Image (cartoon, rainbow, N blue to C red; front, side):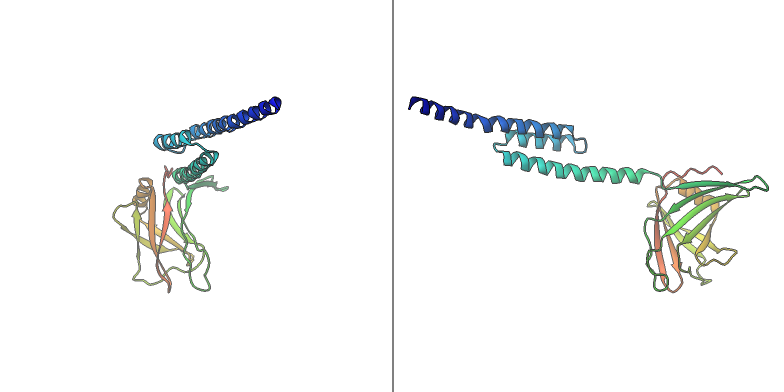
Length: 226
């Protein structure tokens, strides 16, 4: 009988100690994870550490840790988006004329948004802007995937806005081939200088029978010395 009582007492003691020990282990585990997080501010980190330290149950620890993990994941995603936005979107290329050995240089960027035109030009309709240097002369080429720019002779300029500065008017010219998806912008020199000194650009174009549409570009970090 005494042996049975001792056994029961020992089991009760172990049972009472077990959860306390595992609770502390769980706290230590979650606290370590939180301390290794680099995407939340120090004040937010401390608030989660304090909350877990004060927890009396496993459920409280797990709930707090899950909440922290969710907030940290969102902060990480925002940090990645911000980092991506800092990257230059410019693509560079060059060619050499086999007959003259003259070099041509190109810098190209794609629009962040797209127009959705009516039939037969429906669907995603992105734009691209190319700065090119051919035969030692710079030019600005604006092109769309499909569709037609307005051929109204009253529309001879497009509005261009760099960052949040006042919009500027740039003259537009058709291509020599008559391609309805391409326009040239002038004056070239001021356009390039404005692009170099901006992080973003908006260009309002005029479509045939579709009206105006504003394309948006990330212009950060253009490298152009031609």
